[in-house]
Amino acid sequence: MRPISIAAIVLCVPAFSQSGRIQNGTASFKNGLGFAYETRLEPPIPSITGEKFGGGVHVDEGIHRFLVDNSRHVYFGYDVAVDRLPEESTYRVTIRPLSIGAERLHYFSDPANWSILPLPLPGYPAPQTLHSGDVMALDLMTNAETGQKIVDYLTIQEPRRGLGTFNPDPPRQFSYVPGTPRDFTIDDASLRLSAPRLTINGKLDESSARSNGEVTGAAIWIYAANRGRFILSLVPNQALGFRKAGEVRGSLLTFTIGADSFSINCANPIVPGEAPFNLYVLQDRTWKPTYAFADVSTFTMGAADRAELLVKR
Image 1 (cartoon, one colour):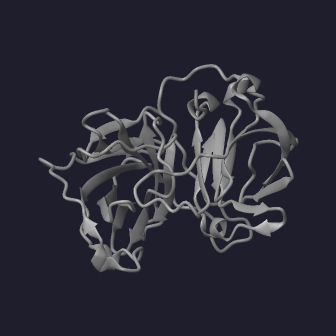
Image 2 (cartoon, one colour):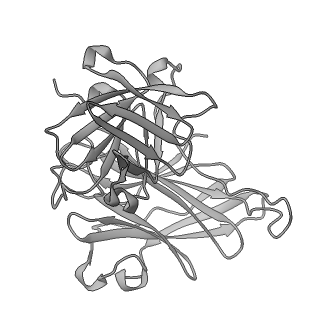
C-alpha cells in the first residue's frame, strides 16, 4: 500500500543515520485499536553506531510517541489521536504536538536532566483518513545539509479477536520498507538480530544482556570491547575479505576467529526458514564507535543493506 506522506517535523541537525530501521513498536488504544510504527533512516548511509536513538510510546488517555537522542540528552515527539469513521475499517488520524513532559513518559531515570527539542513548526499536518492496511509517512528529522531524514511509518491495526479464549489472534508486528521494488537476489538474503546475547569463549558479555533492540540487514555487525567489529553475512563476499567462519541455526549464531569462539542467542529466528546456513565473517580489530559519548566497553550492533557499505576501502 502506498504511504500517505506528510511532512511534520523538520530540523537542522548534525549528520546521523542507521541502516534502514531504527526502531519499531505497537501500542493499543482503549477501544482495542492498535497503533504501530516503524522508524527508518533515509537514506540509510552513513550509519548511526551505538544506542544513539531510543524512545517508544506512552499510553494514558492518549498515545504519545517520543524519540530520544541519547548523545544530546534531548527528546521530541508527537501525540496521536485516532477516530473511527462510519465507513468500515476507516479512521481519521490526527497528529498533535507532544503534550506531556519527560517526567510522565516513564522512560527517563533522571527526567530533570533531559530537554524537549524545540520544533519550529508552522503547524502540524491536517488529519488524514486511513483505511485498514494504509501506511502514513511522517518526517521527523531532516539534515538540511545532506537531506538525510528520520521518518516514522504509521498504521492502524484492527482490534485483536478472541482475547480470553483458547485461540486468540496473535500479536501483529508491523514493518514497512520504502523505495522502488526490484527483483530478489542472493545479496538480499538478510540476517536479523533481536535482543541478542553475546557469549565469547563460553562467557556472557554482560553488556549485551542490556541490549533489547533489533537490527536487520544483508550485512549485520557487532562490536565487542577489545575485539573490534565483526561484520556478518550469509553471502561469501570473498572479494571484500570475508571468510566462512561459522553457522546460523534458528535463533543461534556461532563463529570462530582464531582461538576465540563466539555465539549469539536471539529472541527470534535470525534467518527465515528451517535450514541451517553458513556464516561469513570479516573482523576489523581497530574499529570503535565514534559517536558522541560512545561507550567503547559496551556491546553495540548495526546493519547495512550491502556488505560493501561497511568495509573500509
